Every structure is written in C-alpha cells, then in structure tokens.
Length: 303
Image (tube, rainbow, N blue to C red):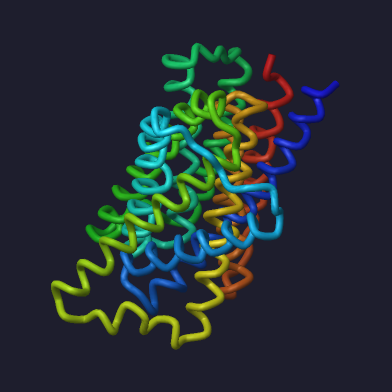
C-alpha cells in the first residue's frame, strides 16, 4: 500500500512538472528579450537557490549533509542536469520557436527507454513501446501540421542545441534513477541547484569582466517582465521541477518518468495561444489526444 501511495504521489508530481515545463519554453523566450543566454541562466538559478534557501528556513529541519566521498555521482548528475540541459535549451531557444523546442523535447522518451534498457535493465513490453511511439507520433503530427518542414539555417542550429538538451535529459533520467537510491530527493535538488547557481554566475561574471560590461549583468532587473519570468523559471521551473523529478525517480522507472515530457509540447502550444494569441487548430487537439493516450498507455501497461 505504501508503494502504491508513493507511485500516486509521483504521478501527481510529474503531472505538475509537465505543466510547469510546458510553459517554461515561452517564459525563456520572453526572458531572452532582456538578457543574454548566460545571464539568463545565472539569474534563473540565483532565483532557484534563493527559493531553495527560503524553503529550508521555513522547514526548519536542518540543512543537507552530503558526504564528500559521495559527491562525485552528484557532480556527474549535475553536469547533465541542470548544467548541460538548460545551457543547450537556452541557446537553442535563441534560434527556434518555443513550440518547436517543446515538440523536439518529446524525443526524450526514445533515448531514455534505450538507455534505461541498456544500463538499468528496465524491460518494456511490446505495447509499451507502441504507446511511446504513439505519443511521439502525436508530437510529430503537430510539428508536421505546424509546417516545420521548411527549416532555415538558424532554426536548424536552434534545433541542434535543443536535441543536445534532450539527450542530456535522457542521460539525467537514467543516472538519476541510480543516484536517488543513495540520496534523498531534496538533498539532490539542493546540490544540483546550488552547483548550477555557482557555475553559471561565475561564467556570466567572467564574461562581463572580460568585456567591461559588468553593469549589464544587473540591467535586466530594471524590466518588470524579466523579473517575474525569472521568478517563474528559477523557483518553479528549476527548483520545484527538479525536486518533483528526483522524487518520482525514487518510486517509478526512469522510462515512465521520461514519457511525461511528451505532454509538455502540447502545453507549449497552448501557452503560445494564451500569451501570443495564436490560434488553436484541430490538429493541436488530435495531436494532444495522441500524446495523452501514449502517456496513459505506457503507465497502465507498465508491468
């Protein structure tokens, strides 16, 4: 019964995570209007770290204690998520659209299923694989109907970086499954968030010092739009989603955690409708149903 409750909690958390991530693509696009990619990453994880410290102060149950001898696996995990994943994603979003970036992220389950089968020995039935393909097919259908066949060099460059972020995500899901057996979810989230904050801020400050533009490091905060977008990206889309993912990996297989990312592209399309006044077409609904069916199918047939 306890395991069932843990799985229900994990699926509820993953649902919230996919909603937050789905909207995050458009928030990154909005934030990039006011800051460079490295400044955005630095401010994003500064906000995430601030939210994390505030959480610990409210909880009043002590700070994480991580044995130095066990830091290496956390460093490796942090390399892929959040360092590489968010770096590649942010760079890619400079050259491609939020909807297209969200759509490409649906390829993550394919990589995750393969890596999980090889390294974690997770077995997937024939019908699970069919539902994975159905879910990805829904995303591809939306991409096709959006007319993404004509790709410019800039868009191709953006798509390449987005695909690199997708590979990083898949590796993170697989590595995270093992690391979550050694540490609790909150300790992992703390380590990853603080590490990203330190690394991205060091890079951003170094870049500005070398170019003599340190004052521009703080300039984006003069814009109210950047302020609330960075709070969303830092606290919700970085800190909270990391915690929800790490928690889910302690209860359910990595391949099933990954499949939830297929719903994010649908939300990315809907966020474009809400914030950019884009039109909802029938193919969005059809593709969304395919994605949802795939998510439900993989998890119902997990045995």
